[in-house]
Length: 336
Ligand code: TXA
Ligand code: MG
Image (cartoon, protein in one colour):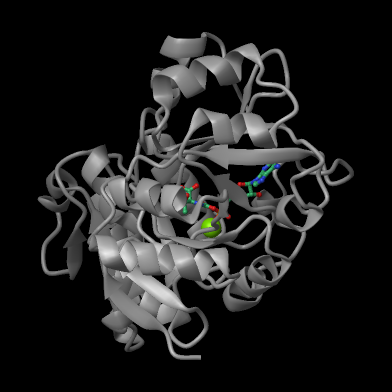
């Protein structure tokens, strides 16, 4: 299949909407990461999304909408916490999980009786969904297990020849995926940390719990969490930002250089000041920059042929939660 790479001007959004309506699959920008979209009501499109990504079929998809009316058409009941999130935080980098109506096909939800819904805060994405006139399923537009794509180039690197269209809307502003919240229980639960900070959600709905990884016998509530994720080809190690940061990365670098292995650091500007004579990618001034640049830099390390990535592990607060979660998965939990 030939994949068209198109600018996101109106006529190309309309063309992409036509392709979506007729069962094709289109990658499009959102504020978090690029999504690989298909009509929620096209069995062929859903099958082709899973096939193009190489994604296990029991990992459910987020349904993207452009209006509250569309949410009402898909869910059984909007709970009070969901109502407050829709009113105050949508469109935005947040996804809510609610009990689904029978109209939502099983291949979208991986057989679950719930559906995940998100209204992206991106003019291009909203226009595309509105113009398509159907809810759009969209996982991140990367090959399964790879870091999520934050530019059209990343999507082309992974999916060229496997999908109909890539709409280029430049770089994503948030850079990590949406925060997924299970709103079916009285006290909502964060299933995946993401681009909307827990602190901001608490301000709106009060108490919200963090999901605890289940014991091996229990079924995870968010199926995606059991799979390998966000892994570049290079081996990733997390390095906590403490007084030993410079010593640890220097020792690791020196030892591996002797074996002919290439190593790069990813860290915030201030942290990198203590590092001398080791290749490093500057992730920016603050945690917002770090989130925006994380996936791009993981991919860049592969393009630049590095064997190891030593990534600064941020504090577990605000966007640091999402960055830490992605780095922990990318490294398989390996820490220096
Ligand atoms: O920011 C985002 O959320 C991006 C953009 C494209 O919107 N999308 C995204 O989709 O990250 P994906 O498929 O890569 O991740 C969806 C996550 C998975 O962890 C999946 O298991 C979870 O949402 N999920 C989907 N439906 C669910 C459901 N009914 N219950 C619990 N978790 C669900
Ligand atoms: Mg993904």
